[in-house]
Every structure is written in structure tokens, then in C-alpha cells.
Image (cartoon, rainbow, N blue to C red; front, side, top):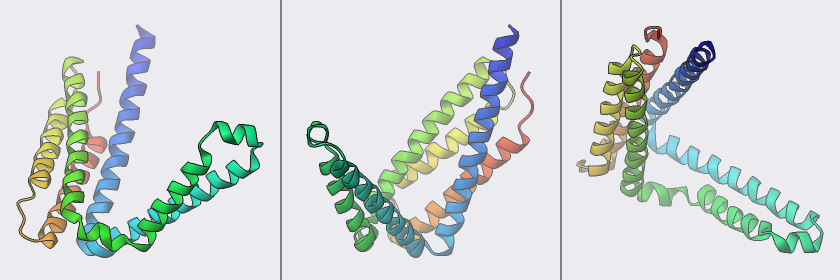
Length: 188
């Protein structure tokens, strides 16, 4: 029984830290999206492209360092070349992503929906364990799902309004998650 309580406390602490981390990330990204959405997104795409290029180079180096029979057994060359191509596209053609923003916003909405479903699990677990804080977790899940529905539905006539909504939604969700992680009552 004591071991189960210890494991529950460790799990709750881990969940609290994860909620704190995701809340902080959501808030920071929300602020950056509000300040300069196009430049922020371009920067993220370029940094991601550079990272993909580095990973591609690592894969290629590994391929050529292996003995030919070992190298032939894997697909390091293909992986390396594909990572290089994807990285170059992200780093040098980030404007393509900005032009296809409505599709990306829908994908982002789908990601928020997945997070919201995960929050439903967390709220249901807390409710079934008779733990405090399940109402806040359920409210956070509902807010995530509502924001996801708006992003997926994309009712905005301009991309700028969608950027503004995404920034505000992330800021609100991040603030809410931070509040829940810092001021949630202790579990029994």
C-alpha cells in the first residue's frame, strides 16, 4: 500500500512538472506569435531545417564509416539524403510553409485536439482516484478542445486573424496550465 502511494505521488509530481513545462512552452510560443508571428514561424522553420541538415550529415557520416556489409544492411544513406533534402527545403523555402498556413493551422488544431484528449484522460484519472484538481483539468481539456475546433474549422477571413487567435489561445492555455500546475491542491 505504501509503495502504491509513493508511486502515485511520483506520478502526480511528474504530471505536475509536465503540465508546468507544457504551460510555459505554450505561453512563450503564444507571446512570440502575438509579437511577430511571421518572423517567429520563419525562425522556427529555419532552425528546424538546420537541425535536419545536421542530422542528415550525421547519418551520411555514419553510413560511410560502417563496413560495406553493415552499411548495406541499413538505410542510413537514404535517411541522410532525405534529412538533407527536408532540411534544405525548410531552411531555404520557409515561405512555402507560410503560404500554406491554413493547412498548417488545421494540423496545429489537430495537435491541440490530441493534447485536449490527453487532458481528458488526466481529468478522468483524477476524478476516479478522488483526487483534487480534476475540475480544473477538465476545464483545461474543454478549453483545448474548443480552441482546436476553432483552429480546425478556420473561420477567419485572414491569416493575420488566425495568427492572432493562435497566439491568444496558446497564451491562455499556457497560463491556465501554469496556474493548475502551481496552485493545484495537494492530492490525498
